[in-house]
Image (tube, rainbow, N blue to C red; front, side, top):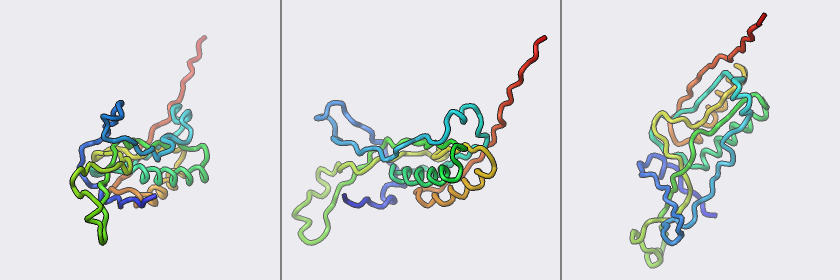
Length: 189
């Protein structure tokens, strides 16, 4: 398998989202769509999250318009999920908020002696599919983590600091606290 280009060739580029996959194969420019690298989008305990058992919520937000490749999102997801599952099993809910729809293309160019006789250059330069990316606007959420207590909150902030270099953008973490709802049982006489 060929090596990936570095993310900076794509990440800051302003592009029109390309998601066109025709049902009729002969009309589609893209014949084969790259498979999704993100295995799971939700982890942890969603039932407890829906009941309000995790009052501490951290959201990782991008502070610029950006493309994030699916392999970068999967690397961040695996890293955080592995640490949370090892240290605090069943005491969190974790969700990847963005979905990679945009199909990235690359016009492969040969370099070296004799390369000019083997390629077409910019003629027919639509390119081959090399991956997928999520196109995010400034202020869009990347990850959501709902946690049971302050001890987990402190460790999770450390985990987020460790994975920030894996993302191609500047990010900030937003913390919210939701009071757990207390059910009042009325006594009828």
